[in-house]
Length: 331
Image (cartoon, rainbow, N blue to C red; front, side, top):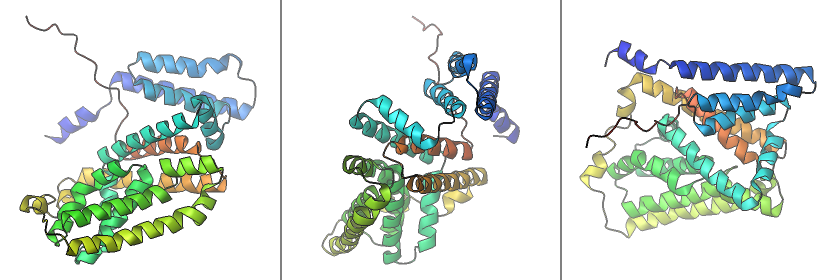
């Protein structure tokens, strides 16, 4: 494919340009009203009109809703923490909020996977630790699982992202499948216990009415350390007491560790930007939440903002799902 064809494919359509312009105008109007500190009056209809226009232009309903809510938050000068509280109140119950956080975490994981942020982050973690000994690889596998699961809040989804990358590396250095499974489970469970926006942490902090800092200091870190430490030595015990081996196809599945990143410089650069955006936004929002002593509802805002920042940094433009074809079928 030539560079001209690539640029043509990436060129936004007229509807996308109009939708972006409408959103930008609405944001500017919201900022002006927020600075003027005056009653909105008829300007209060701007978010409703924006939502209608975006929907008519074919923008996905979720993206249109997020855009309208963002404009409302700007117009009313509502901060991230109060916005999360209002969203949680609108859900009606803690169970519904937890379910929505799980869904948003899955969506964030898909964005991180599609933009290359998650694979690039795993490569960064493992390359820093090193891959020349079985012990270093074990540290790398468990650190990758801890970080990804703790950030995304899903044990199965997080480990599913890292498995295709780390399993061939572990297999080539002699690790056996049951031992690698123990690494995934122990490190992922510790990530669920220590991640700031994982469903278990959100549930515990909401039920016990405590902040994340207090939870992490008195429960998350001690229990997480015991979990990952026990899993580390248990994986080594399993390694010595099992005969199951990876196949040659498993060992060759990942090819060379850096081979995939050398084939497409543009994709690697986008993945690196997305990874830095993912880590930076999550870290900044987590620090802000601890500073403001935000409650469990703050996770709703964090997931949406992190997904948007990661997608934009990875050069993934928001788009609507394909429309069904209206062409008549033969026969």
